Image (tube, rainbow, N blue to C red):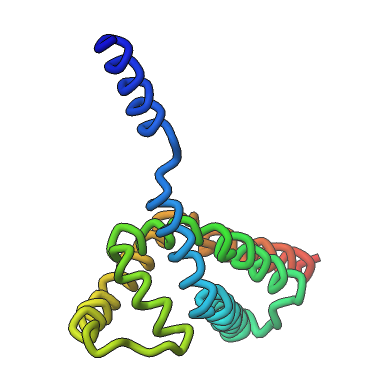
Length: 175
């Protein structure tokens, strides 16, 4: 009888260990909801578009200054497409969720969710909220490092596209 109880208890413990971690699933869901509520994906998209425009303007300015030619739309589109694909938010969302999970407790995520849902911060949680806010700079740094390490970037591809255009336009001028 004792052996059966031990075997049953062992099976229960093993199955609990193999079952998905409900707390982790809840926290992951909370982190995803926090990303949604803070519009991080939209902010990221706007920043990516702005950065892409700046990069293309820089290439165009260099080409204009060095060769007196205008950078064609096809080259600009090729550069923009690289940035669009390489820096698409969906490439980073899971990693950013992991960063949030590694740096915020489930309680802290709950406080942030309440804050972003305009529920405010209870007076008893003000110190906790201050600690959460203090982590903001670290989260930004970790997020930027993550994005940097997860991308190949577009500098090489953009430079190659510009050089290819310049080479082809120079050979056309010579003939």
